[in-house]
Image (cartoon, one colour):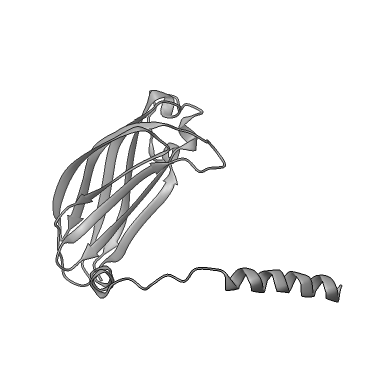
Amino acid sequence: MKKILSFFMAIVLSCSLVTTAFAAESSDTTNKNANVQIIGKYDGPLSNVMKSSRTALSSNLVNVRVNSYATYDKNDGITVYVKLYTPWYEFADPEFTSMSGSASVNLRNDTTTKYFYESEDGSNTISTDIDTGVTGNSGDEGTVSVSGVATANNALAGGGAFAISYDIEIP
């Protein structure tokens, strides 16, 4: 058993010696990213956010997930990121073709809405970022709401709607 363990450790050690070290990011990039903070997020199945009594959910629809998060930068304000995807273990190739909708930020009882459109050529994910320009003071609380529709060749029964909402707080 000792010989097997020694052999295994020798392999691990030799592999660690041949790995490549990467240089640190430039200070400009590091400083810019240091000001950006995630202030809210949502990740869940598309089927949990689409509620309609008139339409039945397709079996393909339950595989699609929505991932969204909002970041805050003192200079640029709130940016909302939206991504539709399918986990690798549920659906191998959804072939997204388009996504459009709106992102609203409600902060201090003032709502700002921006619209987005993104197209792909049969990609397995589709995403976009929306610069809202909304700024606030430390401790301000609000809500991000994202709604839209997406189309895909092998998922969503050709097309599907989504609407999510999550809380944010300015750091």
